[in-house]
Image (tube, rainbow, N blue to C red; front, side):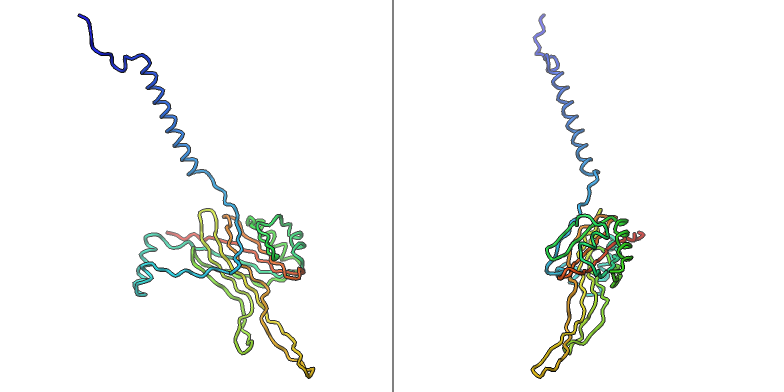
Length: 270
């Protein structure tokens, strides 16, 4: 008797090799996909320093419309405690600044401190360098040793991620019948990223000047007014392990203000 049953797929010539090749191709594609995914996740990404001038100063704080802001103060306090218990407290950050006055042109300052190309060079004499912490410290120590430099203040601010902080080193002076603060004001709003600090900062330095006014009888009167010597508003992306040096040249180009900014992140125990 003859066997009239139909041949199976495995009996068809060439079917088994094609099936093996298909499995091999699928395995190769799967391995490449997994490798690409791991590369994108694990690969080290360098943070590119970025500096932006804020011509209108620090942006206004946005009003919160969250549920907690609508509760009574006692309920808000309890709600924030619960939120911190679930998600942790905002990461703390210490900001250290040294503000100097230079009796030198900006070009001479850059030469004496061996500064390279600035990360930002504005049209109004403003320049910003993002420097590694060691290079920033060397530049500061060299600057502090120059006779043409006078240190104005060295404020330190302790704040946290997403919390705006302000520090003033001023004295009050009566001008036109009003008490006016004269001196240094430093505002900052930091955001702690994985590999960088996103810092928005405003530095203002004012002083009182006396203007001589002559009347028609050739007598003179003294009028006191406020002069802003420094107004710097910036947003900076600063990589971890780095800081910033800000240089603002005066309008006449013979002097300027310098600001050294560094950070430390005290890790809190959980």
